[in-house]
Length: 413
Ligand SMILES: *Cc1c(COP(=O)(O)O)cnc(C)c1O
Image 1: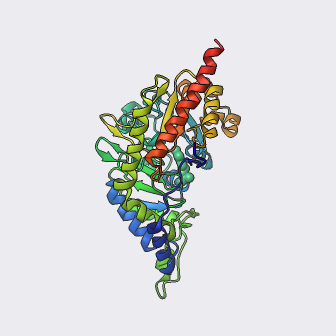
Image 2: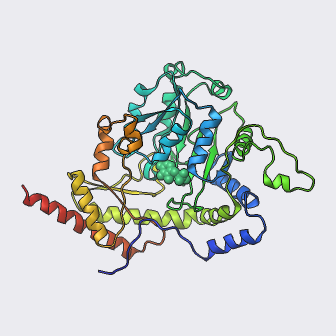
Image 3: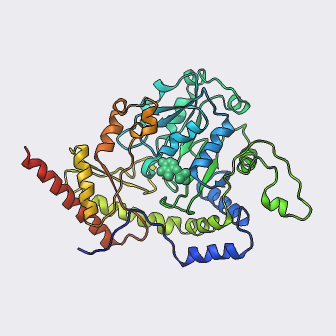
């Protein structure tokens, strides 16, 4: 047993990243500028969409989209109950009501359960690609396009009128590089928002990006310009434009947000993106495969789905489930794993268990699948610098912990 601690998901910071950040610092342009714009166009190429706006987090990016769409008090927005709090918090920021829907055994929103939750007040749905596995976008699109669902839609702004149906905003915080029906995530929803937070597959320390993919007659370039302006206080000229000689005067067209990405962070993103498929994704996939191959030998292990005929994950979170354990036993297993210097995690504590949402009256008992998943889930470490030897250490620690807790179980029978 070594004393080395295996962390859960450290970022990959090497000389390439450091040098690019230093170059950005030395360039004299540190806020939104040429590196951010280059990062945006490379993201758009990667995802196969017209326009991408880089922002300072998933949270602000996704909220900006809700703001643009005119979501406000009195509206309802559908989210899965099994997600990070940000997915629901942005709905509360806009004053709207969070409508929670249970998930399927693959951790994504249970599409078959969405329709009964749709009312005249429903304005948007925010599916989440949990762990990196895309949800079934086509089925969600079919639901919002159903004549009976469209006829319920009650537009209160010009853009809502123009769309004429519920907006699909994808929470792709985990799924950068994942595929749905052969295409990269980004072009499957009206808007797709990524997170580049430090623990995500592709990081800029903090950051995010909005893929703009609205159907005709919307003009995605026009939406980009609008969101870009709204990401900077509604100022009609950004810092770069104002920097031009004599170009000092500007107007403010709305009480906008302040969530633009900086060139220092885009520098990290450019390096990360450049090596994303060949290094990041391929290493993460190898780690997933190693875990699955080893753990499938144990009948207490339910290994996560990461590929099927329509979807391939981005290999973000390895969501392992342990069969027939209580919540207490799951927690003891985690403690045992940590005792062997291996860091694991749980994704997620469902929203109704968080004090704020509990206080609003949400109850986990209404979401049986989310409850079952939460009680038996353990996420294993996955990151580029995790060596094969580390992977073996993780597997051994999980096996030892589960067998110890489970044998205690048997003695009690
Ligand atoms: C990380 C995460 C977010 C929030 O991303 P930020 O960039 O930190 O705002 C949103 N949704 C999910 C599912 C996440 O895991």
